[in-house]
Amino acid sequence: MARTTDSDLAPHELRVIVAVGDTGSFSAAAGTLGLTQSAVSHSIRGSERKVGAVLFERGRAGARPTPAGEKAVAYARRILRMLDVLTAEARGAARSDLAEGPLRIAAFRSAALHLLPAVLQRLRARHPHIEPRVRIVREVGPGSAGEVADGKADIAVATLGGSVPLPAGLVASGLFEEPYALVHPAGHAAPRSLPLVDWAENCGSYTRDWWAAQEWIPTATVEAEDDGAVLSLVSGGHGMAIMPALSLAGAPDAVGITDLGPRRPTRQVGYVTTSQLAGSAVVRAFVREVRATVAGEMSLLGCETR
Image (cartoon, rainbow, N blue to C red; front, side):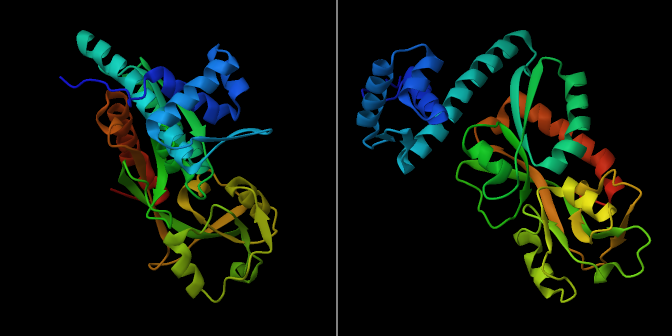
C-alpha cells in the first residue's frame, strides 16, 4: 500500500494555498478559513518547503502567486474537487444513484444564453440531485476552458481550435460547427457598405484567415462590449457585423441576417473538462444532456452537429 511521505501536501494545506490564491492575502485567507494569520503563514511556508519553490510573493499589497504558485493553486483546486467527487461518487454508488452533488459549469455568453437553459432543464428533470452552478466567462485568452484548467469549473462549453492551445490535463470534444453570417439593419439595400461593428470575443483564429481575405470588410469603427451590444447597435442602424449563429438566436426583427455563402467562416463549439473528471457521474450526465439538446435544437440555427 502506498504511504504518504513528508513531502506530500495534505488537504488542509491545499485549502490554505487556494484560500491565499483566491483572497490575495494571508490575513483574508485566515478569515475565510477560520484560522490565525500566523497559522496560514506557517502552512504556506511548510507547503513551499515540501514543493521546493516559493508559491507567493509577500508584500504590503498582500500575497501574489508566483508562476509556481499559480500552478499550485490551480492543481490544488482540482485535487480538492476530486476529493469532493470521490465522496459523492462513493455515496451514490452505495445507493445505485451516481449523479449527485455540485456541477460547476463555465460557458461563454451566447452559449449560456441560448444553449444552457435547455440543457439545465433536461439535467434537472433527469438528475434532480445534481446542483448546477454556472459561471459566464468572456471567450478571450484562456476563456471558459481556462476556468477548467484553473480548477474553477468542472466542465466548460468552449470554442475549440483557437490560437490558445488546450492546457495539459484537459480533454475536449466537439458538439457542433457554428456558422457566421452577415448581420445588418433589416431591409438595407447595401449592407456591405456599412461601417463594421465588432466586439473583443469575435473573430478568433478560427475565422482570422477568412476575415483577412475579405477586402470589403472595413476596420471596425465601433467596438462593443459583447454580442448583445453589437445586435443592439446593428438594429439601431449604426452598422453591420459578422456574427456566429448562437449570438443571433432571438435576434430582433430590425436585424437582417444574410448567409455568407459556402465558404463562410465557422467555429467549433464543444466541451472541455479534465481527464480525471471526464468519468465522473455529474460530468457524464451533463455531457449526455448537452449532446441531446444539441441534436434537437442546434440544427434550427443552421449549426452542423457532431
